[in-house]
Length: 288
Ligand SMILES: C[S@@+](CC[C@H](N)C(=O)[O-])C[C@H]1O[C@@H](n2cnc3c(N)ncnc32)[C@H](O)[C@@H]1O
Image (cartoon, rainbow, N blue to C red; front, side, top):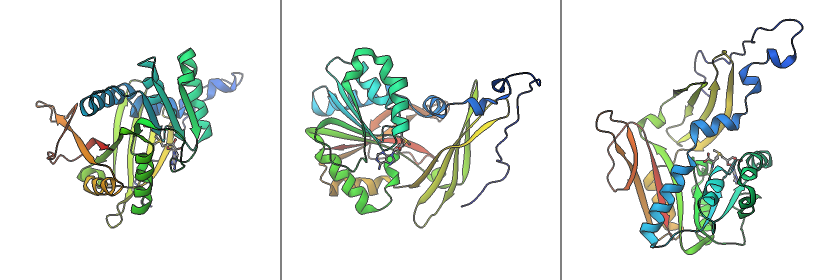
């Protein structure tokens, strides 16, 4: 795997006297909870919920009630979903028990009684589940872990089977020429820097290795707080696979561009023609 220069983790200690407690000498990175920074830098559940509600209503002429969040991690979307309506239910599926437990403490407990509307399931998203959902969402590209076409198609088929008769499957995808470059993208927040590190890309297989690092003002860093080993599928491939899996339609919601800055404007509309920007993130919507 290709290593880039100048990216050694710094763990400079905060100054502390001989008699000060251990915690006084701990760096921000040593005390940091990686999920807190991940959620702040990467996720926006209210925007995802808004998008799902708006598009589902437009496509199906009714309000969706049940959400299944695949690869749910801390189940932030599940929590936002049930917060928005008394009749709502959410199921979150993830392999990692510790991450699910983090989600229970930080997202479900604060919901109070409404937490009973969320069920978290420790399982593989490719396991069969005995319930149907109006919406199944797999966000932040987690399905890219399925590198084999047959494996991805089988997952899409299972998703389709897990949807209500008029259910909709929501995915997201990043792409564009920059997605295939070895590069680091840094985003500054008042109290940390989020680093998206595209560390390796194989143009033959489209396999990519990416990391998330968090850096802090005291010079400490959480290197490789999250690691990804993916195949960077392309939109037309995903559309073909979704249709092969039996989905009746596949819509690409492309982000509009801010005129003055040329940056994305956060408004996603169905489109069959995208501007050839260096990098893009889109919502992909597979209709049963
Ligand atoms: C990138 S995180 C996604 C978190 C969240 N969905 C988001 O939008 O940010 C990927 C999560 O997928 C889980 N995961 C990976 N493979 C899985 C599988 N086959 N079945 C269920 N969960 C899986 C990991 O445990 C991890 O919590």
